[in-house]
Length: 588
Ligand SMILES: Nc1ncnc2c1ncn2[C@@H]1O[C@H](COP(=O)(O)OP(=O)(O)OP(=O)(O)O)[C@@H](O)[C@H]1O
Ligand SMILES: [Mg+2]
Image (cartoon, rainbow, N blue to C red):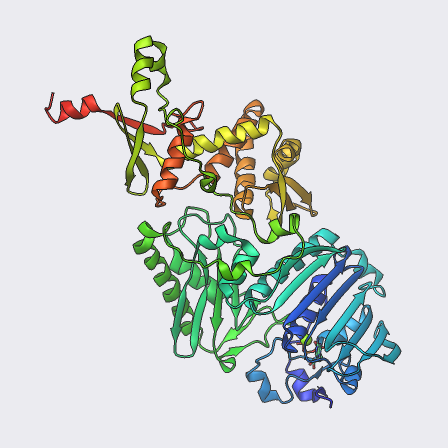
């Protein structure tokens, strides 16, 4: 039975009209939205040449009846609304009946569909039917769109590079996947799989699948319900943010949108919490009744309008505010909390090993390789005051007592260690910076930076000056594993970087490096780069550490060639000798 109807002209006129299909990305977006509206639990996207040659979207949704297959390519043909009033409470992602007509007009298209028994295949070109046949297909719909704009050569010529389309599509798919955790998504390009996330129960698990454990651990989770309005989501823990707003994403009833009200709420609620010139990373989901939001305001459905935007604003501000305040109270125990049960996630199937696995499950870098901790021999525990070893007497004394002990952490900034000489107050960040710096130096000497690719396409917009410095230092960056592709103009796609970095760290390190390249003379750029990388990846001041982690960090520090200075020349530790203590307390 057919479900699709052609909208009456009065209704059609009320729909925000405009360009629906501009580029491969818009085709993917429309087709994926249709699959979601059709109730699919599995959506597969395949691309060739960034979608310019082929876009294929396969779903296991409701399928189309024979009658509907002929109607769906008409303008204003939709099963989702029928009367003008329906526009006031749209519960589906599509509603205009425009998308398939627009795609069909500018491509060669093959649609295969089945409602469960039998099936239909139609082949079309530039809006005309070429062939129609019956066949047996699994329930669901598969649409292949080839040669986009083949009949509009000028449009085709001005399409952007395959890589930049791919980046946009991968980003979009990542964002929708986050909105619909229970649905399986996959994306492949030229046969290579880029995204593969089987359905999971919670959004938190989906976040883990997409961005990895460390990213998840960095997130606070605003969650506030007020009547039939609700805000949930993920907000990066202050004070560290991203250098731009690319990772501020808003969803209204699971639809990713640009929205000024939510953006303003985030800005207001996070004021003073994040480092200067940095922005919180946020994925904010607003759920509210369909009648409270107008989605018919933008031709690409990328914006919405709220009936009560003040209420939305206040709810968003309060939810973020509460999450931040909870954080400041819970900070001291944060590292110890076992807040995520990984067992569920481990059951997710990942078909291929290697690169893909890394993409989806960035292995825990283990900031200080905590996991690899091995018991230390007494010799290894020897403290780094090696000057004392120069005299025979000193050596004997050293041999007698080489032990040290972590007493605890002070203010989540300092590790207090006792040894035979007295107390050491170690700055955890500076110390870890030193440890990592020496590790990175060693890697650099062996040219050992293993690179990995980013799942979340990182597109960077540079200033003209930064662009020049990038061009000048391209070779050096590549030696460090940073591979960037010029997308035209001053946009770069960060394709790969050292495998122990998270996406966001890689971006920050790259941008910080371009900043330093201006003032640092070129022979010093190399060590400076390693120092920046150490700084950005070292454990932060203010983070609570377990005794095991502190012990590991201290033992690693004592193994360093220059344990007492961080790579930027600040001290890593302060010594309070037993002599000083006794003198101060008038014991001696
Ligand atoms: N993957 C699919 N599975 C089942 N039905 C589909 C699928 N794709 C499209 N349809 C049907 O075809 C109709 C037309 O799709 P189209 O995308 O052109 O319009 P729409 O989704 O209703 O509105 P919009 O233009 O806002 O996307 C839909 O209303 C739906 O009934
Ligand atoms: Mg649609």
